[in-house]
Length: 198
Image 1: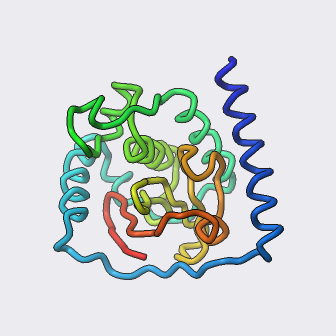
Image 2: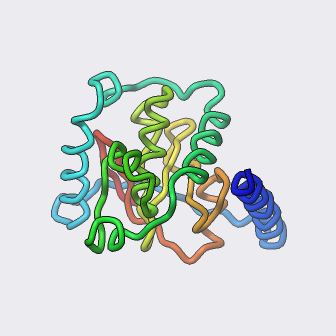
Image 3: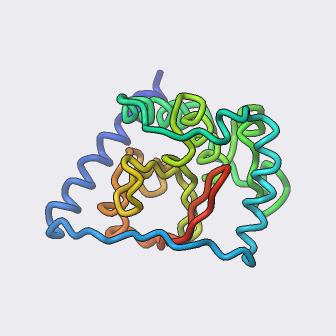
């Protein structure tokens, strides 16, 4: 119970902090454009390896899901975000897997109940897919030294939301309102069927 109260206070403080950042910085926004993902990068090989392992635990319907977000998508996303904050302990890959960087499957995260930002993001992504979010509306966003979930409300790449593990924000926020105020650069995003860069 104490941890749940602690997380809600963090989320409240986070809302207050972002309100003042936006209010006193003239509401500066950035434009976020999708571009094709290059196949020669180390990250693309990691993504393909992760996809092959994750697909073993998914139905075809989940892999190729399309359509609209559920009407109550923000409520669902908030529930998933809070559940992961409360139940998945942040632990480095070195400590957990004995390697500097490992992208686990969602099943592995649930078995360990520990992971770093990429594993927490993978689990959030999978929980959203299992709760009816179409593949083309949700992905895993890579930024400088960090990972989080991205949710596309209307498939406009410049208008998406992020779900973080508390590194940048505890709440679900619009990306174009967040990234002008943090020292992270958007790199790429992916899901089980697609990859793109920013």
